[in-house]
Length: 228
Image (cartoon, rainbow, N blue to C red; front, top):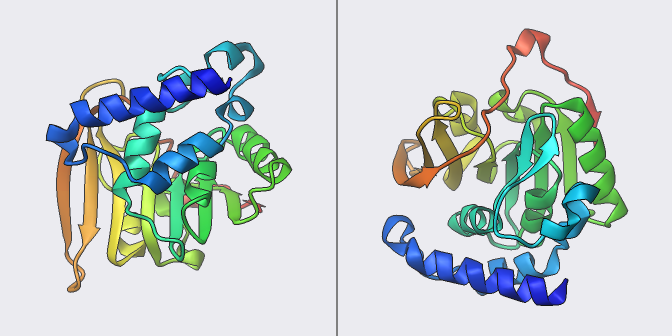
C-alpha cells in the first residue's frame, strides 16, 4: 500500500500542475498533501475495491454513489484554504473519506448524508477510526445545517443544478464554498463561491467535473435523525 500511496501522491501533484491554468493552483498546500498521505483510503472503499484503493479515480460505494477521485478530493480541499480553527460543513458524507481529510485540517466538520445506509456506515467508520472532531447527520443537504451555522467553509460532493440558497446564507462572511454545478450526468462545472464583507457572493467557474447528482427532498419529508 505504501508504494501505491507514494505513486498516487505524485499523480495528484502532476495533475495539479496540469490543471493549474483552470484552477489557479499549480501545487496543493503541504497541509492538504499531508492529509492525503495520512488518511487510509483503503478503509473507506468496499472490500471488492481494495486493489484499486490508491488508483487516482472514483470508485462505487453502492446506492448510486461514489468515493471521489483523490485528485478531486485534494483540489476541492485545497480550494477551501482551511485553517486549524475553521468550522466546515460537508454535504454528502458518502463513505466518509473526504470527511476524514477535512478533519485533519480544521477544528470541526459537520457532515450531512441523505442516504440512511451511507450515513450510518460512514458515521460508525469515522468513530471506529477515531476521527473525533466530526459530527454526521442523515438529512437533506440542500437545506444545510442551520443549527451549526455559520460555517467558515462549505464543500458539496454531489452536483446540484444551482447553488442552494440555504448554503449561501449559512456561509460565513469571508468564507469559501466549493460545489459542482450542472445537470445529472451532463456538463458540470466545479464552482468556487466566496462571500464578501457586505454579504454578496462572488462565483468562479474552475473546470469541468463529473459528480453524481445531489439528492434532494423537500424539507417537509426530510429525515431529521441525527447520526452524531
